[in-house]
Each structure stands twice: as C-alpha cells, then as structure tokens.
View 1: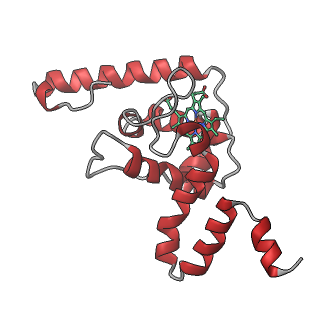
View 2: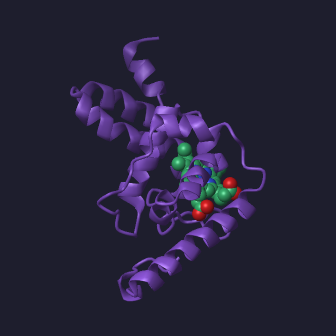
Length: 165
Ligand code: HEC
C-alpha cells in the first residue's frame, strides 16, 4: 500500500495520533496530550467530550469526580467502575486519564492538595471487579455525604461547601 493510500485508510483518531506523534517532540507535551486522546478514543463515545454523559444511560462525571477522588472508597470506585477497569488502557494510562478528567471535566474546583491517581493504585484495584456497581456507588456516596456533614458540623462552615452532590 502506498503511503498516501495508507494515510487515507486511517481513521480520524488514528490520524490524530500519528500527527500527535510527529508533532509532540517533547516528552512533556506528549504527557499532556496522551490522556486527552485516550479519553477521546476510549471514553468519550459514552461520556461525551465534556463528561456530561447522557441522561438515563451514562451518568455525568462533572460533579462526582472531585468528591469521589478525595475519598479512599470513592477512588477505588473510580478505578473499579467497568468503563475504567475494563478499558484496554494500561494501568499507567488509566491513572493519567483519571487525573486528566479530574482537572479538565470537573465542575467542582480541584483542591490544591489533590492526590493524583498513580499507576500502582490503578494496578491494585482495577482487577477486583465490582459485583454491584449501583449498590457500591450508592454506599460510597452515602459515606462521602456523611463525612461531609460531619466535617461541616465540626467547622460550622456549611456555606463554603460548593458541591451539593
Ligand atoms: C460503553 C459506554 C461507556 C464507555 C466506553 C465508558 N463508560 Fe464510563 N460509564 C458508563 C456507564 C453506563 C456508567 C455508569 C456505571 C455503570 O453502569 O457501569 C459509567 C460510569 C463511569 C464513571 C463513574 C460515574 C458515576 O457517577 O458513577 C466513571 C468515572 C467513568 N465511567 C469513567 C470512564 C472512563 C475513564 C472511560 C474510558 C476509559 C469510560 N468510563 C468508558 C459507560 C461507559
């Protein structure tokens, strides 16, 4: 196959990747570029470009990412939810996509002391499947809400809480 035909035969995402490989000379630029492409290729089809999902079918991640990422059980859920744990992305790429999502798709401000997802963390949890996704999510959400209201009681500063979810 000629180079021109091979190029034409490529899908749009593949061309994007090829161009990215050619353009992103520096490792730093590639590191920032990669999770966005991984999200576009592996997640965006269901979650949409802005993470808002589709009512009744795919939940919006925009308000849940930060509160879940700040809670140990929430972090496990984010790694174990099937769309994440069963993707073909490596553990490293998965950690990078989750961090990218937290920084790019969250309506809730990312705290300064946000602890990024690591390859080791993804490796530890993704292979332990969730037996009941909805039940686990509901339990984690209740736990996050309980922690939040006990924090709010102890600081008596409910008005500063910007994430009602
Ligand atoms: C085929 C559609 C589909 C794809 C592809 C997909 N997801 Fe999902 N995702 C869902 C659905 C549906 C849910 C709701 C939980 C469930 O039923 O698994 C979900 C849940 C989630 C959640 C938790 C949201 C919540 O509020 O509980 C996160 C985070 C997430 N997906 C991230 C990703 C990432 C990252 C990728 C790509 C690596 C991805 N998903 C790929 C459909 C998809």
